[in-house]
Amino acid sequence: MRSANMSYLNPKMVTLIGIPGLEHMQFWIGFPFFGMCLVALLGNIFLLIIISTERSLHKPMYSLLAVLAAIDLGLCVAIAPKMLAIFWFDSYSMVFDACLTQLFFIHALQGMESGILLAMAFDRYVAICDPLRHTSILTSVFLFRMVLMVAIRATLLVGMLPILLKQLHLFQSVVIVHSYCEYMAVVKLAAEDVHVNKSFGLFVAFAILGFDMIFVFISYILIFQTVFRLPQKEARFKAFNTCTAHIIVFLEFYILAFFSFFSHRFGHVPAYAHILLSTIYLLVPPALNPIVYGLKTTEIRMRVAHLFIIKPDTQK
Image (tube, rainbow, N blue to C red; front, side, top):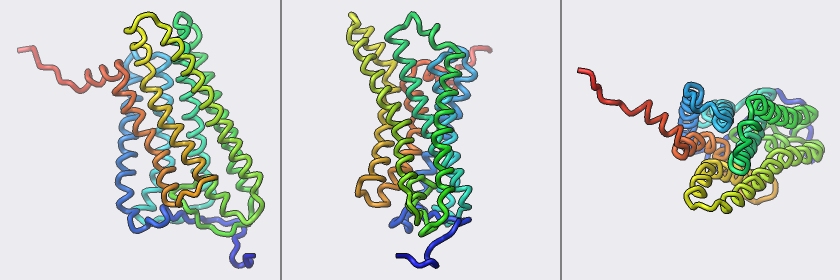
């Protein structure tokens, strides 16, 4: 049993150590992470500019894509500054309340991204399985309500996590073995009973990620059934091609999410491997999403070509 002088009552500060076991390499590890953040920031800002300025892209799918880009920007802003400060400037300390704030925004934005991926799957389902009613179902008001519900769900469920953490007063350590404030990493510091915290954390994960993944999966099963019933090969290819980008983004998000989630709670993965994977899980989707949609979406690709390909001057 720990002595009293080894415990911390209502700590005001915590210490983030970055990647345990790789402290001597953190300076160099910061550069690829910085590169991912830079790609994510530039790619998503560019995506938002294209969608907002091009009238032909003012459609449900692109409106949801713009929301996804804004969420990805928020994730980069929430995680990158402190993480890079740890790697490059040895800035390990953090105010406990600031840690809880970062924790809230990271997990809430993750939940919102999952919800938007579900909304995009629903959009593709209606567009392919019931195309005649697509415009009447996915109206601007319906889209707004759907995005609002996604935001409210993530805010309310994730908002309980820092509230539960604030109910804990005695901690066995103030050293967080992570490069950012992650919920379970903070819970493990407590010297009190944390069954409620762990159980509610699991509930939030399955209520958001688990629920969304199931219904995204069902949506694509119904989409594929409809696509394979199309009589013409060209029509099948065109319909399938409209979903390719969504499927790629869906797979990379949920595979990384659940691998990170289960390795942290149930696996025996080394700490450095888990932290690297969880950080990659947060930064890779924001960096890849604008690239995937830019390459696979004809309208965005054409708009990019229109902006960057210099036309010869025909005036003499």
